[in-house]
Length: 131
Image (cartoon, rainbow, N blue to C red):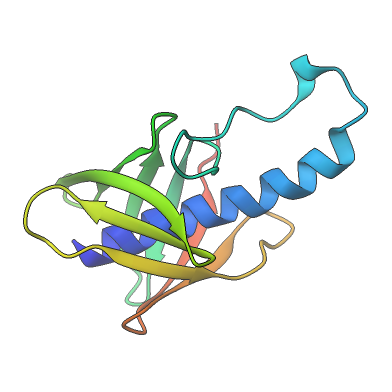
C-alpha cells in the first residue's frame, strides 16, 4: 500500500514539474492549448501514471482533479485517498488507518518519467501513462 502511495506521489510530482515547464513555454499561446487545470489541493495536473517498483512490479496511480488519488497494484487491488504537496514533496494520505507517505521526485526525463524517493528510502520510477 505504501508503495502505491509512493508511486502516486511520484507521478503527481512529475506531472507538476512538467506543468511548470510547459506553462513557461505556452504562456503566450491561447488558453485552449494550455495544460489541464491543476488538482484543487495539490497544484499537480490530473493524470494517470505507471509506477515501477525496485523489484520490477508495476502499479498505476491516478491523480484526480479534485485532489484525490487512486493507486492500483498489479493484482488490481486499489487504495484511495487525498494528495497534496508539502515541503516540496508529493504526499499521499490513504483512507483509513494507514499512515500517509511523502515522496521527493527527480527532474523528469525527456519521456516525462522521473524517480520518486519516499521518506523511508523506497525508490520507484514513475512514467506518464500513454494515452
